[in-house]
Image 1: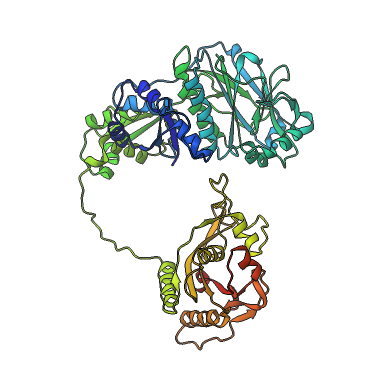
Image 2: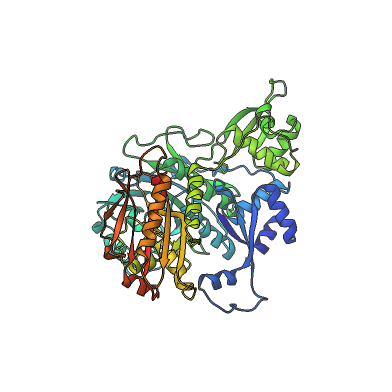
Length: 606
């Protein structure tokens, strides 16, 4: 769930009144969002920079509200969207109507697209905000909204990249092209030196923020680029904008372009940007359209809300979606008896124009979904908004008509039985962190990081939590190190998940349940771990089948002492390994006594 940080005083000013924290929490609850945290800007900086002392005094710190919103409510990712939605919810403002600025067709700005762009980012959309009045607060909100959208619906700029430009510094028409990197030269944002595109990517490899986006285009033979009429570069999407067209507090006319591989998402992103900040234009809630001209039939549709630009690619798409929904579809799932006269005001509170459809006998509601509510895709989404506006806490509790009984997953049942067997063997269970440092996961246990196994954390808060563990071994060795003064022998175990990269999975990674045990004494205790392995293999075997004593094979794993280690086999498949821990590994963890360790994939045993 995205969290939006807004200044409390700016928010209350936009709402037209002040609230106590309890009152605002209640308002958030009623609207379906949550006040997640109350902090200050300087406290946020202190935590990010890991400073011990408080930064500055208490009196000059602006209070920051961190508000958690639904992941599909892109219109709530900025202060303007939250304030507008809450004003409408409490009845202080009517639902705004977003419309095109009236301009002669010959004066409309154009973006001309070349054929080569189909090789990398085939689509582009654009719009203009005229007469914008920026101040420090709404300017920062404008930039923050772009960042929030880039991280959310844009999927870290892989699907959509947003570019914003000072229209008064550039000349239309614009051209969206794809050229070899050696042919693109410009001065990027916040720089004073001109770079060639391939040089620029090398320059940003050390940039903590931009290096995350280089992979999107770096292996392509051509890079996307946007020029104005004078061949001045506007942006190199999705990496960086040009310094020439950078917006500032003095900017009055803003040109917004979004290059994309997914046109639907680009239209949502553009709609969000222009509808949220068109309230600062000289003509409130008016947006100047932009025409996109393709060299082929890549995209031709009626994008205008009134159909006046039919047969052209005109953006943004401010069209209103009309849905006719039977009253019973809304009220039956909620479980309350509401009439149309009660439902219509509830929908209006949630920014949905609603009215009774004439001639239907008081049973159908016509709902007009504005361009800001891209999350409304089905009548059940409308039903959810009615339930929120009515109040979930007001819905009467009822007993379900059918009774179901829950149960544990088979893997969890099996894991509990394995835990019982190991604990009866005299081992004490421990629970360690799922995250560990890169060094602990690889170098300290003599393993190499090939970059194809561990899931790494993009922006870790601490060097101790850089990767998701791929083995239970580092956690048990760290536990032993912190309890090294305990009486010998020390016998500990853990049954938990590891995570490895997996290209076949939906999220690119997969969990795997493992069992690990560690024995530490004045002697290695190899026979102790072997006995534990034999017991585990005995209890997982089928009672009616003869026991298989041939379940170990010699191994050559770097974390174990040579010739003192074995693989564990189950149905001719390798499911684990055990052995005497290598002295170099013990030395790195600060353990003076010999140890023997076993790790088994109990998911494979199941």
